[in-house]
Image (cartoon, rainbow, N blue to C red; front, side, top):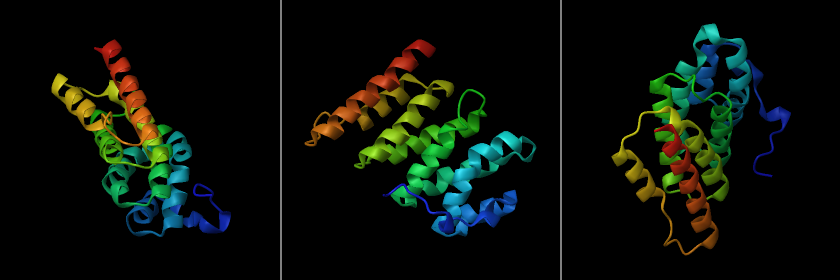
Length: 169
């Protein structure tokens, strides 16, 4: 299956230091990237003094668009475990912008759903303007998509985005 990960694929030395994690995400193999991503949530809990998130989140956000679907889903899962109201504003903005860009033209329903969940979860914690919300709605609205499933996913995502924003305003 697409999401399965064999232990021999992992190269655990890549998570021994923050520097190795950065190298793993920037120039490492797919296995090294997957290893770093699988450790992000656990390491964040234990290594807050290293300011790990402020180093790794920008790298993930910058590179995820060019990565394959397996890595894109792994990034969404890693970020879902560490985002929320305690994320610094610059990182929250980066996560929201990245989630929007990943799902904007996405046709894979798994990616759309995973990154959509991330967008919905983080959007209430960033400053938005009515223009920003209008752009998001316009870009994600797929009422005219010939694929019924993608059309339905889009409408559900838009409902989930607009709901929390109306409460947080």
